[in-house]
Length: 346
Image (tube, rainbow, N blue to C red; front, side, top):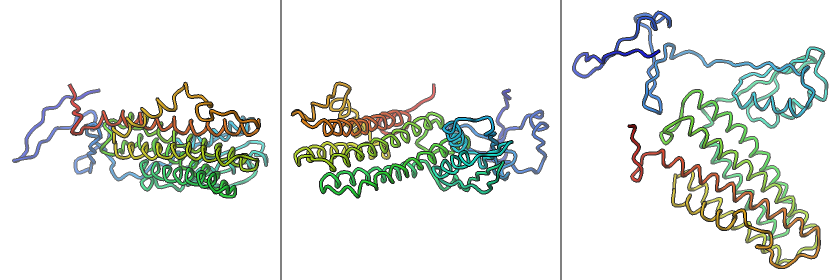
């Protein structure tokens, strides 16, 4: 319930306001106790009566005796990780089968910062060793950008030099981006709960939605790049002309340039660059884009034609995810006061 108080002046420059008696009694606050006043992102103040309290250790217990679907088990463990549980206890009344134990171990391998610390016939304990303060969301996004840039460069070089052995690096990149994706979502949830956001975010929940869209787009770009690399391996194993390879290189290089502009726009809130990305993706990679727009001459070999089509589809999907990031950049800019934007609350 709201309490109304009049601000009083104490001394020459200090303003005070009294605390409601009922609230004080409920919270157990006494004269001499230390409180912490935290300034929130929306200019409100939050009063913490136990500023030095230790972080809560949250535990989730999952009974696998009621779960028959291995994929469901994997998704539930991932979901618990994303929600920020420090400990996940997997129990099974009649025992946990080797197949389920294997599924748990495989899932844990996908998640950064967690390990299995106890394993028995009826119980598996998964423990988090993450320090959330050391993994800012922006830092993880930048790391995902670096890995995707390296992946695109690797695929371009494979096309130019015909070196299939380097394509395995793209598969490793995709797995690492997946790990960073899970970590980033966990950090976003953590930040919302703690309401710790950078100054550019005028609303922590709206900012969380934008960051969530961006990291999802980056994760899908990594998936698309991996699938495109699979098709390149098939093409290099077959007979494909240098002219076709050169066309694939140009197609991928265009996507590389667009991705670079996208991330520069997002990280620096450059709306001119973001607008350019949206225009390019809309005009050159829109829904009306057809495979024949790139390969105007027919390809006689069916397997080659299928691989070329799949390659193009995945590169186009990568580019269209750039548009999502650019749109988030636009939305974030209009919530951020600047020389161009003035935000007022009526």
